[in-house]
Each structure stands twice: as structure tokens, then as C-alpha cells.
Amino acid sequence: MKRVIFLTLSVLAGFFLVLAPLARAAEAQVDKPAPNFTLPDTNGKSHSLSDYKGKIVVLEWLNHDCPFVKKLYNSGHMQKLQKTYGKKGVVWFSIISSMPGKQGYCTPEQANELIKQKKAAPAALLLDPDGKVGKLYGAKTTPHMYIITSDGVLVYNGAIDDISSTKVEDIAKAKNYVQIGLDEVMAGKEVSTKTSVPYGCSVKYK
Image (cartoon, rainbow, N blue to C red; front, top):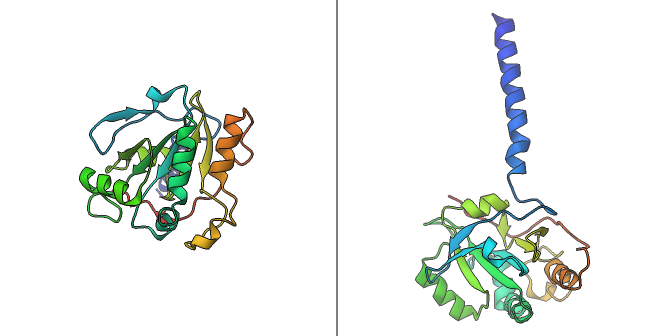
């Protein structure tokens, strides 16, 4: 009887070990096609990633109550990046995956008011309250940044820069992975830093 139980447990353990890498593989992977998704923006318009083939796309996970996000927006740094690269044809999507009742959650009206207050300039602010797209991409923090090439390949996944800090004065000292990556993609070069460890507040999933 003990042998049967042991064998059963061994089979189950092996089953879950197989499932674990499959679950990880379901998340977006660098140098692979970025998973397609469809989300509404704050004005009710739906956006599908596939609609933007031919454009470089940035995904920015957002929570305006997070101190790390406040550093970037209160300094105007994130808005500057959005405007600079928006003028160069980059489609910049900010995404809120906070569930209702959790830090960072916004109704469409609240989100639009924050866009005005912060003078933010994404192509659109997308709402993901059930967290499906955040989990699809493996977004862990706010901010968590992704760069997708014009042919739909994910080429960067990670932090905005290399200094995990809430201090505004650290922005100028930091190596900005997103800025460097976008410049490299637009110059037809391979992205030199494809992944980094994202830092910030945890995404407040459902």
C-alpha cells in the first residue's frame, strides 16, 4: 500500500513539474512574437496589439499611487519619454491592471482626470481590471516596461532603468533601458539589454 501511495505521489509530482515550465512559457518571451491582446482605453475604444503591426509599441504598467511611479511622473520624466517617442511614431500604451478596490485602480473617468493632472501623453491608457493581459505578459511591478518591434517581436522586458529608487535625483544618474532600447530598435540595431529585473510596487492583481 505504501509503495502504491509513493508511486502515485511521484507521478503527481512529475505532472506538476511538467506543468510549471508550461505555465512560465505562456508568459511573453523576449525574441518571440509578443502575445496579441485587446483592451479598452479610458474612452471605451478597443485596442488590439495586432492593429499596430508596422509600429514600434511600448507597454508601461501603471499605478499612480505607487511611489516609484510618482517619481517618474512628478518629475515629468515619463511624460517626456512618451512625448519624445510618440513624435517619432512609437505607440506608447500605459496599462492599469489593478483590480477594483486595490491600489491604483481607476474608473475610466478617474483615469482621464489623472492623464490631465499628470499631463501624460500615452497613445492610450488601457484598462485591464481582471489582470488577464498583465498576467499574459508576466507584468510584476509598476512600472514594468516592454518594447515590441514593428514586426511584432518582444525585444525588451524589465525595469525602466538600472536604479531601483524613489528619488527623483536618481533619474539623471540611471541607465534608461527603455530609451536606449528604443533608440537601438529605431536605428535597426539589436537591443543590447533585452531583460532586466523590474522594480517598483507589485501589480495589484485580482
